[in-house]
View 1 (cartoon, rainbow, N blue to C red):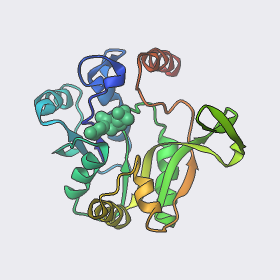
View 2 (spheres, helix red, strand yellow):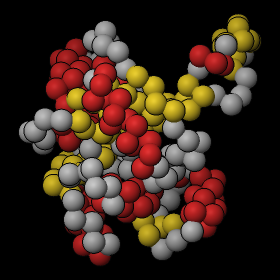
View 3 (cartoon, rainbow, N blue to C red):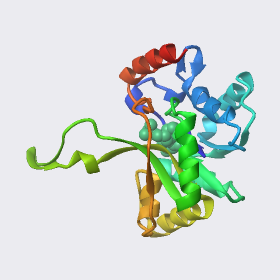
View 4 (tube, rainbow, N blue to C red):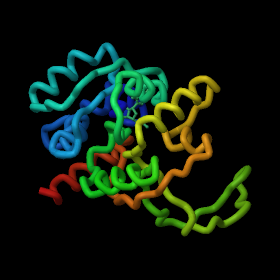
Length: 221
Ligand code: C5P
């Protein structure tokens, strides 16, 4: 499940940042390609803005992305977009939610997430904080937090489908907003496992990320 219906305002492109190209290919396509090439991925559901649907359909054809099962209508918040994807799915098994704006995810991380979600119900990708972390209130440090216990959370986030569905529906009912899917599952009291990911799984958010993305692609090539 790939939410791709954001506006990408922090990128300042004036249009959906996922259409920006890295080495001649839109960011969205770089992301979808990872799952297109993954033999374990049986299909993708993408949340899109209605006004961008046609452009995205054309992109999928142009870059031979064949595993997309549905393009659903995204919402005003990322969580709504993910709920749209969930509503369009009617099977079982493990589902992954992955931001379209993270094109550098490694197949190995995906495999570990799937394995962990199979065994435990829910697992998310993340990295340990590299920097010293402080708790700050009103511009003053309250506490230096033990960084060994702090993780920076990314996507993909992997779930047994019924767990994700229950958590999302409960959040909708309660009017609860989370910044990721894991929060919705955590509030049900269910365990969510951490899978160590890589620092290059960055979200393309600002202009600097594009520079980093170009360098990363060149190095990988
Ligand atoms: O804005 P940000 O990069 O944090 O969004 C993460 C992902 O969620 C992006 O792939 C974006 O397209 C998607 N999104 C969405 N619907 C929204 C907001 C964001 O599908 N309303």
